[in-house]
Length: 511
Ligand code: SF4
Image (cartoon, rainbow, N blue to C red; front, top):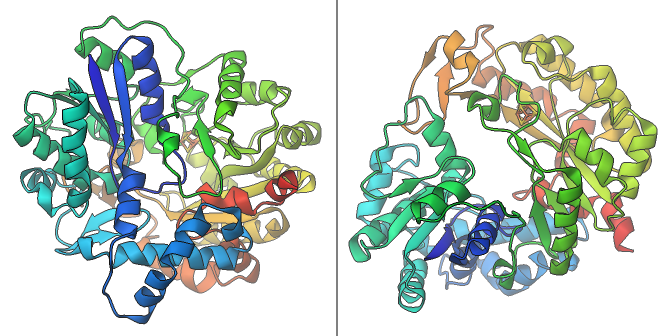
């Protein structure tokens, strides 16, 4: 049996996709011949390099600097200062925004593929792309390549890894094309977005004519069973060899790796992970460390832990693993970070940045949404991390049902009070997950964006709705000088994917 695993455009491409790399590794150990195709990075290079006749000043400049910028985004010289870096990514982004292939309403960027008329949250719109694959702006790129793959490799199966909304149009264009041109090939679809759709209470399986197997969460076992293999226990170390034939948009190789599936905390009421009740599984720490060591053959400049939250039990082992590679990932604010000795060992283990979900600076709001963090622990943790030179990328969430204007102001005060210890900031406005307890408890409208929407529209019980939140963020929050500095420091477009390259820890390590 053979399978071609495709990661379709379009989403950010700073590193290879871990999902298909892990799946390929398991399939190969079970004697399935698996090929990987990162159509996302390849498709973006294809479009970036097309002639562009737009005459506005910005596009002309972006075309003029194209060759140099493509080189710089994959080289440390492009990351010397944040202003220089931002100019490079904005100019590259411009080439996709103004791509001649983005005609007929497609809206492309380095992060997404949307459409002025069609929505990736409406099954009818995705079926339209399946019926009219040539309407996909990536069609001229992928059609000849897929024909080539089919004639050279003759796969029995094709698997699509659908993680982000920006990948939906091209995925369905490819699915439709395959149905017409190679109906004998079996097709599987999995990945984060595919899992969320299937876990929605409102999933009606609208694509069954196009897809033979929908995979939810981890894909190995159902795929092996569908192919007629018993699933064997084996290691799940991602196989990046084929994917690293591509040059990703980063100054060296970032190797992604996950020690867990799901989230060990899994209690935050605002979180889709919790709402979907995803399975939690973790590897024994010693095994994860062995697997990470085996990834050193790819010569990473940075390790990216993909865990929703790296478990403290793993961190306690990891800090003594002798790791030499700079790394970053999501960690929850807990007692471990409030311990200065532990944080010191964290820095010694190569940690250059932590992604930290603070969400709110109001303890009452945190408690009511089951965030499970204590602001006194947060204060100590931020201070400890700052002292040892680990940068912090702090995530805030406005507009949760318990928050009001006064609580949002407390968040602002908390952030300002800790300004010296916060390097990068991500601001988000709450979306209510379709399966969450909030969606059940609050008056809400279904399908406000489409039948595949993962969120519901709700009326904020305290009248703290989007227009008020936006006004607060724009007029009050972002204008605060310390906060404005954190926002300016945060890399545009690739945000946390590239922030580690601007940290003190990474620069010191690099010397
Ligand atoms: S810790 Fe993060 S991933 Fe886990 S439930 Fe809370 S928000 Fe979700």
